[in-house]
Image (cartoon, rainbow, N blue to C red; front, top):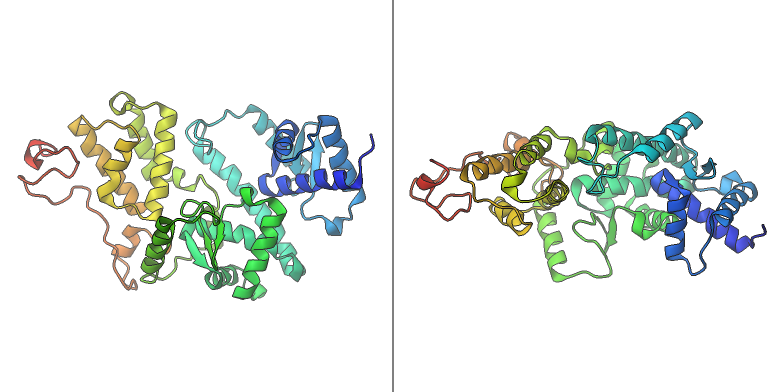
Length: 383
């Protein structure tokens, strides 16, 4: 089979981008993605030939991310050893698909989290080493740390992102002027749809807050301004590096004890809720996103009701709110600069104390019940 240089480079660069962004993918899925984006579709035979010819004809010094094709069926990043690659392939073939698409309750959350964390750490180690030896190769590190940072803080300006990078990698000595070129190169390498951040007017923003910098609404700007105003009241939470990296893995919050207890409680009450398991998991993930972005406790019930949850049973409603408030108190929030309300309620250094919510709100017997039932407290959750 003969391929033009342009076609070979197109397929090879696509393989590099996917290997960098995902670590492993089946060629069947890779071809499907490729054909959705390119006017001229490809076949398995052409994909295999193009991937291999690209590696043979491209100097290693010019490769952004190497890859290996296994069994004519899988593309795997060359950051993995052959043994690790075979384990990844076996897991890829045997793993059930989680209904929420995040590796959640469809299989063991902690195992999935550990696997993704290992992949993220391995990738970070490789790009950090490259950035230390070649000043022109800092883009992957800047991009990966940006993804982690917005997972923890939600929003940072370029100066703040440079400070976070220098905190964990002090020898780089980056300035805010290094950030935009690094992010731009990172996005061009792996594609805008595969990066977990949005670049907007000197800021790096979590896509949950701002999905698309080209379609910004007044509500988006208002939310960004609100979070930024609150962040000024708190010092930035900067855990050790290993803990910091965890926030680049979407599963992280799902491994907390509070969330596990909450999902177990909901699992015991599917009939009461009136929702199937996969919808319950999806809704819980949505709740977590909103908590981090600043949803008010008074909106908890409204959110779940809009998602179809039923709150007719008073005992269920009371225990539900206890779980929801515990999750709130233990969630690292964007407007608290990565801290949890529990941490800041006892932290002397906080400019403004962030009070942790009480599990049982203080209300009078004749006041409306805070569960949202519309009844007086003495005739509802006090019974």
